[in-house]
Structure formats: C-alpha cells, structure tokens
Length: 92
Image (cartoon, rainbow, N blue to C red):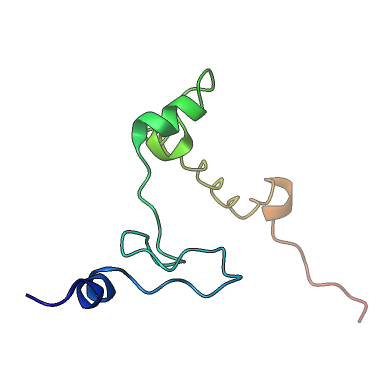
C-alpha cells in the first residue's frame, strides 16, 4: 500500500490554473456545428396555437396544371366573292 501522500496525489485531479473559470470540454457535449435533433413535443409546444410547424404538416396538394394554350386559328378562308376568277389586270 502506498504512503498516504502518494495516494492523494494519484487520485486527486490536478488543480486548474488560477484565472480559468470555464470548465474543460465535456465528453457529453456535442461538438459545435453538430445538428441537434428536435423533439416533436418541444417543437409543438413552442408553436402552440399556430398549428403544426411547416416541417410536420403534410405537403399541400400540387397546384392544378395550367390550361392548355388555345389551338392556332385556321387560315382565313376567302369569302365566296373573292374566289371568283378575275381577268388579269391590264395595267402593270
């Protein structure tokens, strides 16, 4: 069995240097930048009275397709008067 002063030195963590108030990085803490999964209950509680948040709502139905363009107009038919053959013009 080691002497009491050696046992105390081995089991006690080294004291933090004076002036450091922030604790060291925790092994349970997620590294910065890691997305935290949201809990639905908390999300709903923060949106109470506003319906479901957009991420939990089903997607709205897609908008109806636009109507097809009108068919092109047929070429204009000549009236009966214009279909009568005419004599060629005498003047150039």
